[in-house]
Length: 198
Image (tube, rainbow, N blue to C red; front, side, top):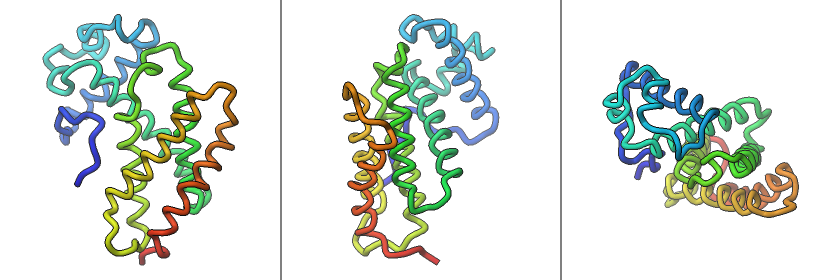
């Protein structure tokens, strides 16, 4: 069972030209979003900004919502992986993920763009699942545990708690919420892992 893609409607590109086109479209959407609200942006504007045709746009994305979801997933994934790479030890990985999600959701829900109205779980959950799944490969797991189901469970737990926190008026600081999420999710992690794999 594969982790759900941020863009289930479109196959993942593997050649460099397709990857460049996708990146150009994401960059173009980012630039246009600085000037206009998402709902007022046309696919032609995005394609023009990327110096690509509308046909090329549709080769990669079924609509501008799919492009926004993909752009969000890539940016969130890069941000979270950078945070994890600079984390001093693996033991604090779940807290680091929780803090990254809290801070990302805090920014996304407070900005006036369409990001604040978008259903972020389609972009954020697959990234968290992938990172958790990759982390599980470093540990011996209890028998009978499906790593993909476990990764999904942990991803939704972190995302759900962080989403609830982000929507709370007068919320506690993100660092404090990350500690709470870690205290709830870490026992689950500890219960199915038994030391590092060799």
